[in-house]
Image (tube, rainbow, N blue to C red; front, side, top):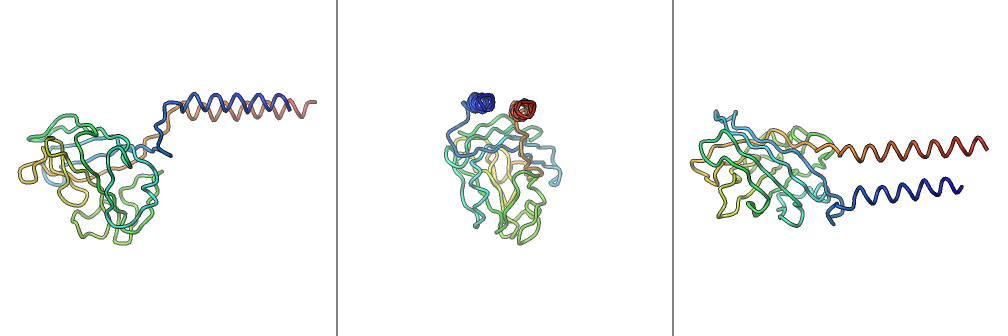
Amino acid sequence: MAFQSRIITAGIVLAGALFAATPTHAAPVSFFVDWSGAEFLNNAEAHGILTLDDSVFANSSAAPFLFPGAEVIDFSLTVSGADSGNGQFSLSDFTAFTWDTAGAELDPDLELIGQATTGGYWGSVHNWSSGTGDFNVYAAESSFAPTADMSFTLRTNNDLINGDKLNLVSFRPVPLPGAVWLFGSVLMGLIGVGQRRRSAV
């Protein structure tokens, strides 16, 4: 019994050490987010990492806004291949994000592009009244970051007339760090050892 107690205590201490640097949000989740200009015959690409409070996935009402420092915990974006607006951008370059699942509950553990909504597949239709939802970013006025054009699409350089147009092509979860899986396997191993010791007594 004392051995099992030590295992549980060690597990709690290890978990605390692993997650001590975690932000104060309830459950942050991160995604790789990619846009491409190929559909619009340009070479622009945008690749980012977005960290959200996972409570947004329970909110499927029409087009709620997500805000930096609230629902959006972190965002970094790199634009390349565009005629203008190439570079690296951070959360401070954006004022808001649009999140709309058209009434569907998307599964954040899978690639979101192509998941079913009430109006079709999420990410498949690029107009404001598509019925398939939306995800978009809105650049700050003084930033040269990409900004929302239509549903699931951006224009580079914060320029809705001359900026290269890109559409969202992937929105997929970032895998958990190896340390988390290592912690789980070590804890399961310790529990197994404890059970073997108990049955040997």
